[in-house]
Figure 1 (tube, rainbow, N blue to C red):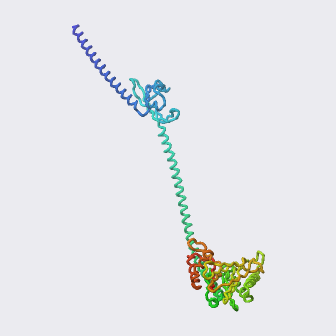
Figure 2 (cartoon, rainbow, N blue to C red):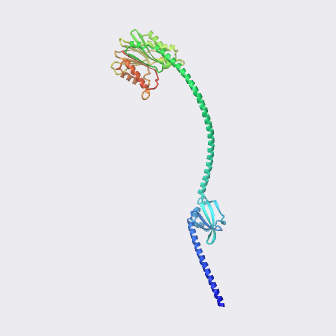
Length: 448
């Protein structure tokens, strides 16, 4: 009986031992699995880009990964055993902790997860540098504020633009009405000016008839001087230039004159001076005395003196007395020359006049020299005003000038005097090429 009981106890003990061995084996397997898991977790933590710290419940650091070392700027040796100085719990979390990273302050995201390490409760602290993210968020917030401000400004500008557009529309309407009124006034004024201009033109045209009536008929001149021409081209309808002709006995007086101004003022001077010249020629045969008397007559009639109030108007002139039978020419001039081209010659013989003008500031008893020239049949002489040489035109729009004028006269010596006039007229029109004539033109040519 005792043996049976003892045998049962032994079997029961063996069963218990077997059960305990199985439990020990199972626990060993669990511990091995846990160790493997911890090793795997450790490998994962080592490679994790976030900073990972594992601390116990008292806040003492048990583990730190390389990312945390880099983030905090401390080695693992410095971290292990370091105490945060406060207990750690699963609800500990701070999104925006400021830490010193090396020599730079940065903001980190701080999160806590409960774990077990070596069968003891612990906490995993995940730390991530959110400085750049926060900076980006702040920049985004600032950008949004700026955008809101800009939108507000745009709305203000849009409102202002609406007001401006309304004002502009009103101004355009006012301008339209003003233009309509102005166009009506301009049209009315244009019509008035057209009438006034026509009246003035008609008056000037009538003045031209009077001036032309005072000029000697060209037929009389050509009868006395059959080989001659007179090229007369006023700048305006009437002219300050004039020519004069007188036949006294065996002598023929031919004159080229240029009064101060052109147009109507010049025409008044030309008619005034031609009357005084006519009287002087009737009273004298000497060219010097004729010009002397002409100068005195102009100054007396215009009450010219040395005072600043008196007029300075006057005249340049070339006067020739021609004895056609004996081919003798007596010339006197005031600021205008006499040009002679002898038959068969290729140069111009220029005789200068007295370097004084008629009237103006010239002395009352001013003497004008007379030059007597013995010419031959076929010789040609020219007297002229400054208008031809001073005409603007050509490719560069400059003056024709005296030198070119001389060459033109030399080049046409093989032509008759009528052909010379036509040539000079056509040439000056081509030279102007649409440019406005600036002065009256007068050229007189005589061939003996």
